[in-house]
Length: 72
Image (cartoon, rainbow, N blue to C red):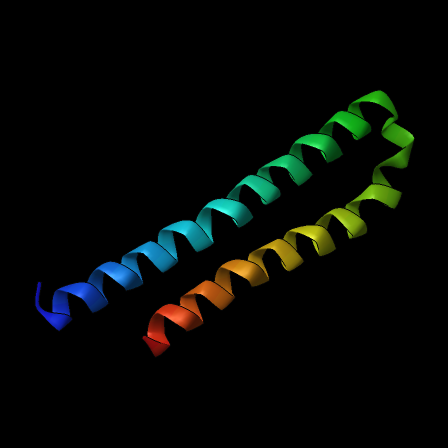
C-alpha cells in the first residue's frame, strides 16, 4: 500500500472510532435525562444544565479525534 492510502485509512479509523464513543455517550445522557424527567417532571430544571454539560464534554472527545485526524 502506498503511504497516501495508509494515511487516509488511519484518518478514517480515527474519526470512526473517535465518533462512536461520544455518540453513544450523548445518546445515553439524553435517554437517562428524559427518563428522569418522565419520572419526576419537577426536576427538569435541575437536570437540564448537568445534562447539557455532560453532552458538551462528550462532544469534546469527538472534537479531539477530529483534531487528531487533521494532524495525521
